[in-house]
Length: 169
Length: 157
Image 1 (cartoon, rainbow over the protein chains, first blue to last red):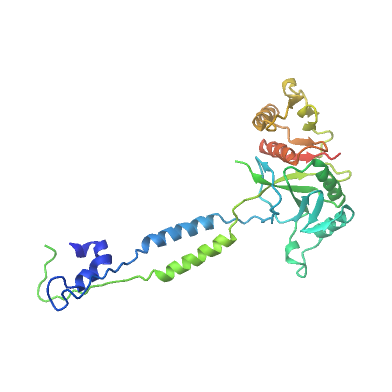
Image 2 (cartoon, each protein chain N blue to C red):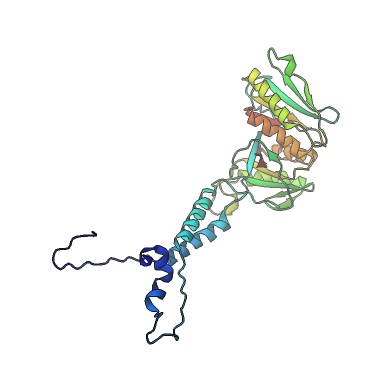
């Protein structure tokens, strides 16, 4: 009976089968050696579930790299963000693709980066851009900073603004 | 009886052992890769279309719209512009900001009521003040989008 059980086969099969308990040459000398075999089936199951969960969590939308000092606002509705130039507003300063620019040079830089044709020689991070601007700003920012940006970007021909938000549940 | 054997029969025991260790290695590699590349926070974007120069986001002249104006005294005031037969009970509605901010659930209910009363109303305009909080502006735009006001814009000062 012990030999037909799974537990018996994996844990005690080799010990009971090989050791001599009563008499024999090895009586008193052989110590019971406990051999433990690890059940790998459950480990494989948990790993497979974890892989499936992480694969389902993958997204194909454009990943915006955030500044850890910026707390994004939450909004009830939103759409996935497409690949576009990212402008970060932090402390009244403007960072276009992580490069700080003044108000005077911001319009030219936005125009250049959004109207650049798809070119193989162009850097990878600006290829395939749409004529829109992703705005990343802290939730406690005042509208005065955004107001300047809207005017400057509009002068550069930007009509679509995408304000990065956290989805609100 | 387990079986009837006639004569000498040799039963071959077929024992098949599957080595799971390489399979676990592959799964562990996949997990490590996915953990490093997965995105835990899914960002969304609230889209706004602005007009440039003489362009207008809508082809209609004086299109009907709902305006959300941030006022330092009255809070957030919604008004209907160029709407035919506009319901008076939905025009000029204000929401004051309490200690915890605006009551966004009430704002959402109001917008849903406006959309139900005027289904053809598509345009929404947000008119903030210089000191208006960015979070409140984005919240209003998000609620307008949620209630299917598809043409949402911000009016700079």
